[in-house]
Length: 239
Image (cartoon, rainbow, N blue to C red; front, side, top):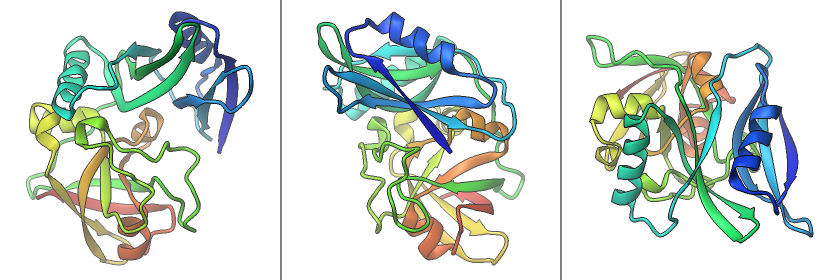
């Protein structure tokens, strides 16, 4: 479940950041922000509601140049990680007093994911993103993959795509830009079905990773190939 909050578009970035921080709670996790359709302009902040309480570090909104190349965007995210932040990996367009601004959200720290075992596999639950299992739009996702990985349309029903946690990506590949071109082979442990998906994004959210949901799959990979119903027990390896 999600809840949405509209913040005025005439407040500056620190004030908007404070609103997000003030409205997060152990069961309400900030996941993205978009431009609202109201007049005067607003910023629509989306929170994911968790059944179980989760400890989250504070969100920080970082201004970013939207014209960055994928390599430059990767360098920017890597620099945030080097400074102790864990970026969400997506760029958001917001309203501020002087017009529009592109920002990236990050947290000071976040959960880690165990590396592959001796057989090369990571065991985790996997959720779906971009579209829901019935093909409707996933309102908990903005439908665009990480700019580092080409800003892929994750609402494409034919896309076999995956998202892995940014901290795991950095650990496995050194630089985030090195993730490009890599795939994961995912097995649904409940029925034995297997799919191969391109890594197109970084995720799931911090709150999900805490609950050992450390893989996101697009509709084609999750539903068509693995016969998933929204949450499945998986093992996956990098190929």
